[in-house]
Length: 201
Ligand code: ATP
Ligand code: ZN
Image (tube, rainbow, N blue to C red):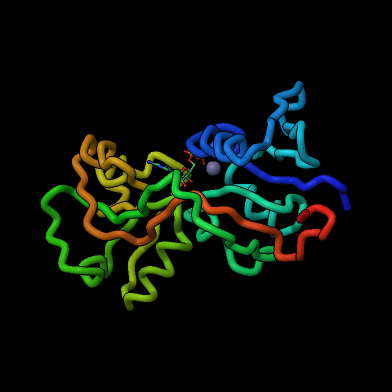
């Protein structure tokens, strides 16, 4: 095992700057060298592994990284049993957003039962599937890679399940949110195996 602690963070995107700021505020001096994948910490035996956010739970679950910073939404969407589960350590208070169900403005929503038989487009099929099952609702889940908010206009779906922070994107597409499936923020995760005592000091 490497004698340096590895922390996986998002390389670029909504969590990237805040993750670096958090580590710097904790006293770590980050050396932004020529290696785009790995930033070294000058004053501690720590490396930052800079990757796509979707890969962070896998890296940490497999112990390739000891710690990671990732959205709870990404963690919750992982398929069960694919590899070892990372352990959630704490919420970090940034990257807040909600996974919400939305439909055309004016949709008559009376609770989860109103979703029965609908087609719902999402990039979070596992989280949505669990929510529907917990509420005893059967609906068609249309899995998309992005641009979920256009699905209702294209008649691809009656509703969507997507991340919302301000709601501006929904509104611009004639949609309104009416159910929260998951409240998300950035979380610190650790490898399931104990971190080596030498590194934990
Ligand atoms: P990557 O290239 O690393 O795969 P990405 O495009 O999947 O990036 P980003 O859009 O950078 O991801 O979002 C990263 C995380 O930021 C999300 O998974 C979520 O936890 C959080 N987040 C906060 N607000 C929002 C929002 N309005 N929309 C989407 N994600 C948000
Ligand atoms: Zn991603």
